[in-house]
Image (cartoon, rainbow, N blue to C red; front, top):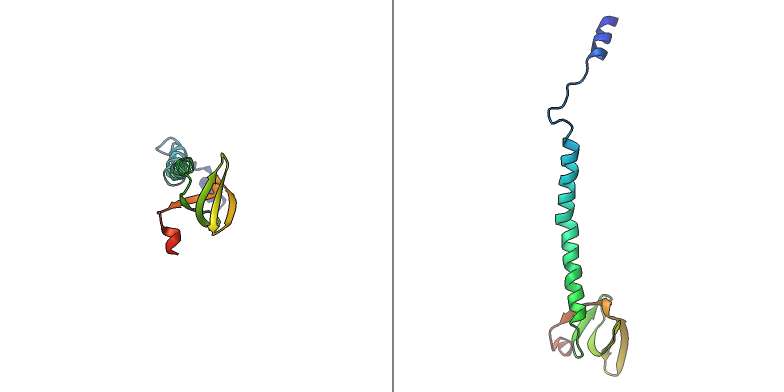
Length: 109
């Protein structure tokens, strides 16, 4: 009975036909998938947001990340002053502006 066990342990696994390239191909494939689905869309959104921030102007109606909606009354290098109600002005960071609303949106609400 012991000769069967020694024969089974003596067998060596066959060499893989791809020469061990499968793990490398898998890693390259995972990087390509991560680039296409995560990295590329994120950099595209960052570029669009940077362009939106650069094009802000006095009188634009905007919404901030926190949900405040108002009209820009004054712009600085890093801040924007929003009129959120008559005679109510708040200062927010320019980077917190999420989107520019179509003209007249605030007067309709």
